[in-house]
Length: 159
Image (tube, rainbow, N blue to C red):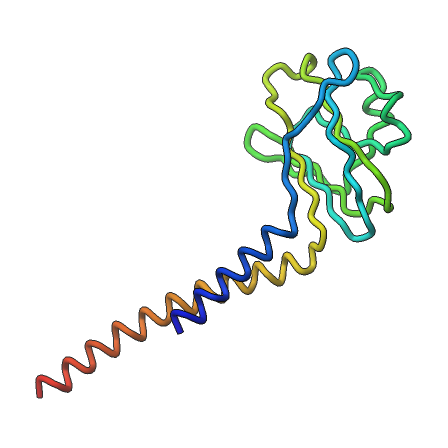
């Protein structure tokens, strides 16, 4: 049981890590404008951006964006999560294409580089998360069974 639970956790963790590609890599492009490398988004991918001063834009708008028009050119997120001292914007319905994450640190001096993540198969990620939880549960249950079995064996041996 311990081995099978360990295998479930190991495989689930390994496969889960291959589904999400996180980065905080940006290049200065223009005056005070930092741009991510191009992000290829296919149907069903989820783009997540952690950072309140970041904007997601399509490749066609990358040359046009500046801080004064970022709110109109930037794409609206599907949902926004307000976290402690930060914001996560989730884009789950983007059409297939090339996108960039842009931010302007001069207007958010307290902000560190935003972190963006592309999750290639959110449905599989949910399944792998369940497999990891089941694997951990199997490991815990196997230790409980081992402890109970050893006490029962010791009690039977002492009679």
